[in-house]
Length: 243
Image 1: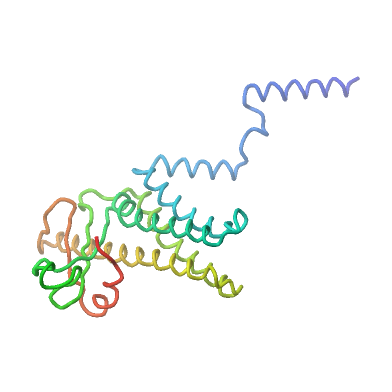
Image 2 (image 1 turned 135 degrees about the vertical axis):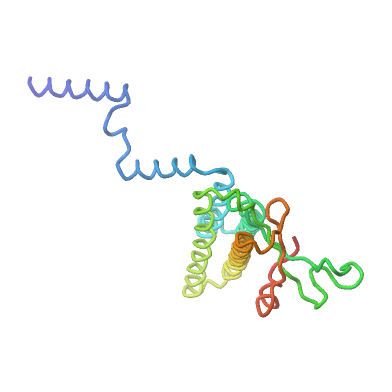
C-alpha cells in the first residue's frame, strides 16, 4: 500500500513537472546547455549572423555531401557535381560576401590602369605582362565585430586543413575517383586563404602608415591597390581570376 502511494505520488509529480516545464529530464544536460548557450551567444554577438551562417553552411555542406554521398546515391557524376557546385558557391560567397561583410576585406586582380588593356595588352596584365592584386579594406575607424572576425578566420583556416586530411585519406585508401574533387576543394580554399591573408596584411600596413602620418589613401572603405613585386607577384598573382 505504501509502495502504491509512493508510485502515485511520483507519477503525479512527474506529470506536474512536465506541465510546468520543470522536469529534470526536460532540462538540457550541463554540457548541452553550455553548447546551446555558446551558439546563442555567437548569434547574438555577431553583427552579421546570416552571413556567418551561410559561410559555415556552404563549407560544412560540401564536406558532408562528399563524405556521405555514397550512402544517398550511387551516381558518381551527380555526387561530384553537387560537391563542385557547393565548393563554387562557397568560394564566391567567401570571396565576395562573407569576407567583405564579416572582416571588411576583399581582393581581386586586374590590369594596370596606366595601359589600355583593350587594345595593347590582354585583360588582367600590366605593362610587364603580369597581373597584380587590388585589396579592399574597411575604414579603420569602423573595426570589425570580434565574433565575426574570429569565426571568419577560423573557417578560413580550419576547413582547408580538413580537406587536406580528406586528400590523405583518399590517397591511402586508393580512392582515386574522388581525388580530383578534393584537389579542386583545396584550390578554392587555399585561394581564399592566400588572398585574404595578403589583403589583411596590406590593410594593416596601410593603417600603420596612416597612423604614422605617412600618407592618406582616402576614399570610402579604405580602398587601395598595390603592385606585388618579386616571386609573390609572378607566381601567386596569377592564381586569381578577374574581379
